[in-house]
Length: 122
Image (cartoon, rainbow, N blue to C red; front, side, top):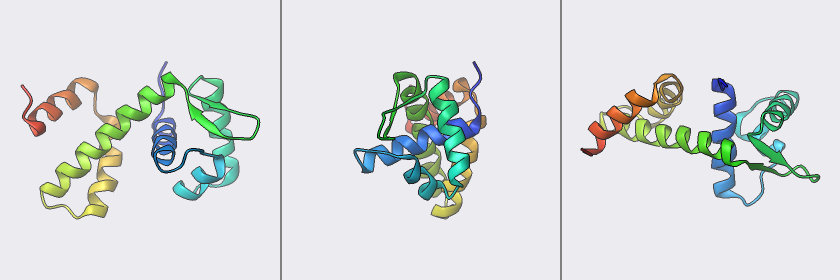
């Protein structure tokens, strides 16, 4: 199943928020991404329906194993590209924005090749 960039962004955001707070709710995502409550509500419904998140009766969101795998992959890409662009002289804000776009369009093979090149892994 193809997962869309917006879903990847939501999953990554849930991961980032969960690193800062034990509990994540839809309103936290609204505030972080500056999206509307209805947009986030629809997205959470779709992510839950497709098995990427669980939501308890109090509205707390957790990533399923499937959702966590995608979130971890996006977060790794984001950090690697942001840091690399900063090292190349790009300002932090632009580097983070560009990394967010790059992380979604690159194939796994290309990402792994770039990662090996950047980190010096052989």
